[in-house]
Length: 123
Image 1 (cartoon, rainbow, N blue to C red):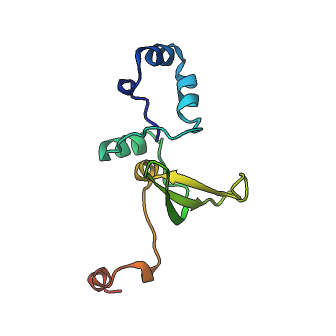
Image 2 (image 1 turned 90 degrees about the vertical axis):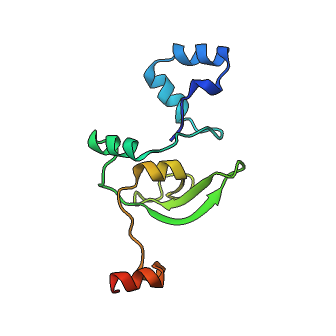
Image 3 (image 1 turned 90 degrees about the horizontal axis):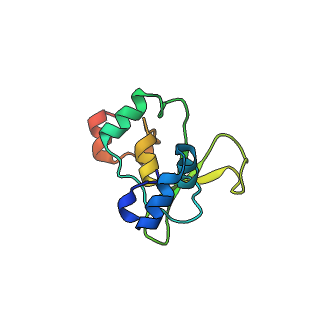
């Protein structure tokens, strides 16, 4: 979830940014050719995204691992159900803010649940 905060930009960058159309700003934010600042996700943002259908519960992702980039930011390695459609054979890395923003539910195998929680759930 790239951030478009202008407080981190110098005057020339702000001027260039503000001259872009909204579509061009979106293209720049999601270009993702270098590490970029991301939004801090709040529950209010998540609710608004769900209410306006920006986030929906119609697709599942299979998280198979984690990684950190050169700045120490956490990413989740995801196997997408769309098949081998990209240069990573259908896998991609989703940032922690993206997962926080878009996740509606989580499912885990019962063996991954700590024993104390299993007991509370009577599993």
